[in-house]
Image 1 (cartoon, rainbow, N blue to C red):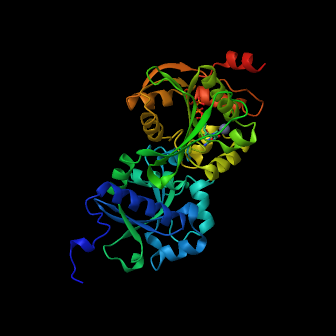
Image 2 (tube, rainbow, N blue to C red):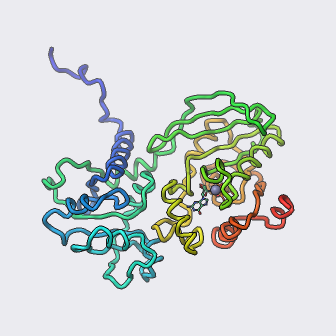
Image 3 (cartoon, helix red, strand yellow):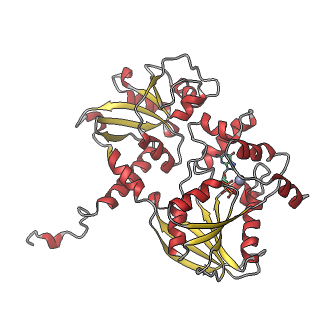
Length: 375
Ligand SMILES: Nc1nc2c(ncn2[C@@H]2O[C@H](COP(=O)(O)OP(=O)(O)OP(=O)(O)O)[C@@H](O)[C@H]2O)c(=O)[nH]1
Ligand SMILES: [Zn+2]
């Protein structure tokens, strides 16, 4: 049969942003399997490995015959928690250090800050990749030459491609809608599932009653918290806020609760549990995250905006204590006409968490109202 353009069933050449997304997702998968990814910058190519996903043997292979070529790259947040004066990310030539030493330098609470850290380039794509992959943002890096045989089978991703993928990440469309009766909500509730974004995670909107979209719609944007929402953990106020949020929406005659797949303020369940470990050792919720390399709150709300738009909602009464959520919606053109506090409950175990959110996170917690609400 003659070869012609009609033979091509999947021509992606003209779908740049889709290709960028697919490549970015492939890079996430490679990193999670402990394999190197070749990151292309304007200044050259760097092979990177996510430390969170590698074993001692992977480090040995990555070093190859040139132990001096491998550096450990850490974020500015980790650098600051190490007490380094630099405000940017840092790197360290790891030489022949063993895997345990490298891990301790990356995450340890008593990691030596007297080793020779140097300022590193602002490769924000590394923090972005870690965030998409739900991995701790610590990377092993090694310069790679074009066609380097050591990395012949590795995926190559342009930093610009990842940037483009992130810019287009928040396009969600409805894929399923069905009634799910809830024990504590008398109004009819429908679960609407949206698909899109990077890493293709499905997101949930719970539509309560028949919201009137010609007026500001009561909306709660709730980040998932398996420990609090599902198991009633005493360490946070999430479960109470989830249930109160739904009830408030029902009392107002209808609205929407967006249940975002953003465990641990977007860092993922594994990182959140490691942060809890650090909290048991005395760190507060923000410092524990910084110790692992995370900023105070890196959540993105593009998915929420996209879902609200798809539901025909342009103005909301937002049920939250978190000003960042208000700012994110307004920046995206969704009007926040009013804010209503969601009180939750104070427990001996979550008091420090709530104090830190108020003092350091800028949350608008109404302490007397919470105390009055829950006795
Ligand atoms: N990293 C980290 N995440 C936590 C911790 N405690 C709770 N979380 C997460 O924090 C998020 C809380 O989300 P939300 O319920 O939306 O709360 P919020 O940002 O305080 O905003 P509002 O409740 O709307 O005022 C969830 O993703 C939890 O899993 C913690 O100590 N560390
Ligand atoms: Zn919680």
